[in-house]
Image (tube, rainbow, N blue to C red; front, side, top):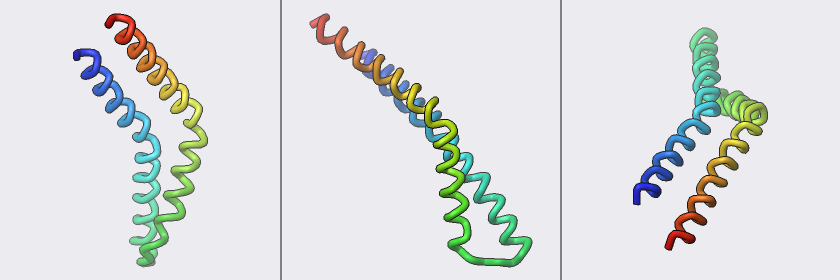
Length: 89
């Protein structure tokens, strides 16, 4: 039972870490665009979507290899633990 709790905990941390980069990029771009809107008094609501999407896509393109390696390592550990549990029973 301890193994399942540890895997769930590790999976939640992995979700947090992997989603942090795109979310931070979206946050920074949203802040910059909102400052630009405030300074220029342009109050278009849809202006923030395109820069945020572009920033998120760029971050995923740059860090996608690392994200996939991290997910693959986690998946390998999960499948190894599944094999160990099935052999132990």
